[in-house]
Image (cartoon, rainbow, N blue to C red; front, side, top):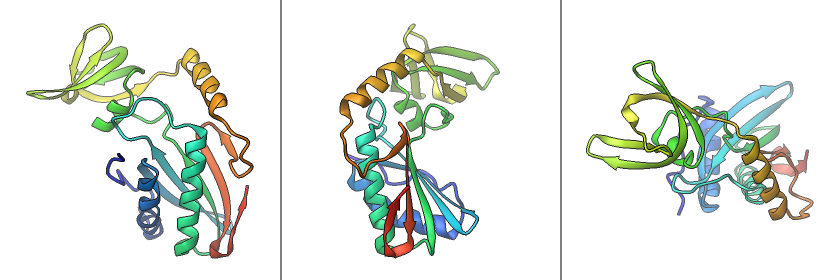
Length: 204
């Protein structure tokens, strides 16, 4: 079951708000979470960036097949409503490890990952996040060494990049990959499509 449809709209524009309203049902229908929507101008065309993620109760990364499916669903929804005038480039991506961990759902999604926690008292804790549990005082982060860090004591966190994990995820992605000619992912986390308004779409 998908979580709530939208966490934030980073673009802050009327177009971004309109895009969010149109694509939210398409993302929700794929069982995914709509993380962010931004729209910017790039010369004579617009760039629409949509960030999606797995629901907070799931562990792991969104595969390229699922990213391709939701990209096509988002593109179809935008074409049907024509909320972005003229030619625009649609980029659908996942948050990736560079996303700061600032909200409860971010930490839930980071379970099994090696994280660095910056504490409100200026200290720092590094460890593998095993679980996020509820306690009387609120959510608590449980690390692999047994340490328990109240979420309210954390100013922010970040996921550390692990080469072994990247190799494993790349192998899994290749195993799941199909030869679908409509699925052109530039990397494991972004799909780009050039759209000609409501008249159609050309894969870029």
